[in-house]
Image 1 (cartoon, helix red, strand yellow):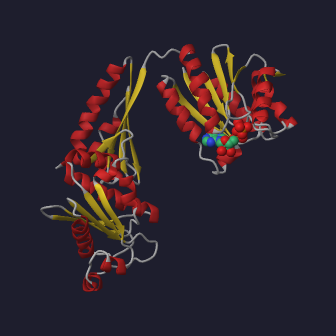
Image 2 (cartoon, rainbow, N blue to C red; image 1 turned 90 degrees about the vertical axis):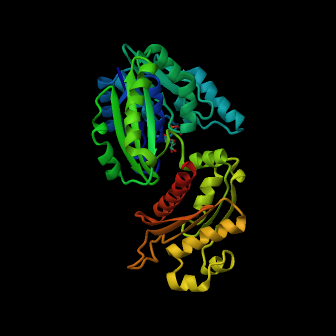
Image 3 (cartoon, rainbow, N blue to C red; image 1 turned 135 degrees about the horizontal axis):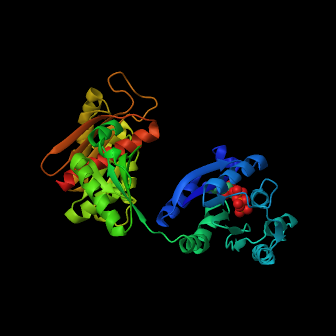
Amino acid sequence: MHAEIVAIGTELLLGKTINTNVSYLGKKLVSLGIDLFYETTVDDNEIRLYTVLKRALHRSDVVITTGGLGPTVDDITLEIISQVIQKRLILNHAVLKNIREHFHRRQIAMPKENVRQALIPEGAKPLKNELGTAPGLIMSLEKKVLIALPGPPAEMKPMVERDAAPYLAKKFPANWVILSRLVKTTGLAESQVNQKVKDILNAKPPLNVGIYAHTEGVDLNITAKAKSKRQAEKLIKQIETKIRSRLKEYIYGQDAQSLEEVVAKTFKAKKKTIAIAESCTGGLISKRLTNISGSSQYFLLGIVAYSNQSKQFLLGIPQETLKKFGAVSKEVAYLLAVNIKQLAKTDLGLGVTGIAGPKGGTKEKPVGSVFIALATPRKILSRELHLHGDRNALRMRASQAALEMVRRYLVK
Ligand code: ATP
């Protein structure tokens, strides 16, 4: 038994709208124990939509469409569904009433085009749309199910939670569970992680291990399918232990945890404080730390010292140092860390300076050169990094490396 999603809308293929419905529905189906085997995105074209729906209903047991339920001429989903399943479109008075009430609440006269949205295939169960006019539909077709949902996520999700998911759970009771665990690493390139866990990535069903690289680091996703939650947890634990023993200190968190969340928790547990003087990251490190509520307990001061003058006058970096080594240098990062620590009277001081690009690089210090220093009560730790990516990615990577340096120090 498996499902297929058909996302309908020309704007999805033009890249104007990111297809977030698929990611949401994919997770939902996993939680219901239903395999998702296919996803097709198709434009608002009658022939192509007809072909895609016909194929989906032929090869999948559950077909979920999103989009194209609106009142305009390019909203063709219901018309094509009615052709594919060979059911007439019939005016549904309850749906029409809901559409009328929607306009009444907004004190707008209902355009006559909206009547079209109340024409639904014979035998279909309409799903109430609390936020818009397009109704959702559930159609039971012998052993298969076709569910049509509106495109806007805010309209689609409540229908899934309230109607579609409970319907599927009842119709196809899961006889197995799927559990996932995301192990998050930072500081290693994808190829380095791959090298360390190559054999684990070959895990066979009911286990699956995937590797995902992104700006913040490289994650390993373990998925297990089993008859019970306990069994799935056991399978995951075995692989997770292996992964942890290989990637050790590079692992900073798991599942939805962000690095800043982990750092925040560690600061609270260790009762330490920090102040940050950052240049190329433009406040990103301070922003990330203060994203976490309660951060005033440990984050006492942040200065974005962008110009040489501010480095000199606010943070006491001598003009000679700036001249001799350059604003982007190990020496300046060092002094930024030491001086901000002293200024804010914190346990730790973090200094970050670098070249975020795309301009400003030199042969000796190309774009992506970043110097980080962490002043601690006993010593000053420092790192020189050569990062890659565009300006945004570089700033993110630099902030990640700096936060990771703090985390590593705190957990020691
Ligand atoms: P409505 O009548 O409420 O607009 P609809 O079913 O006709 O519903 P569409 O016209 O297809 O929906 O899409 C409306 C908007 O919904 C899109 O412009 C887009 O912002 C969002 N949307 C549609 N499909 C998706 C999707 N797969 N993922 C994320 N957003 C989507």
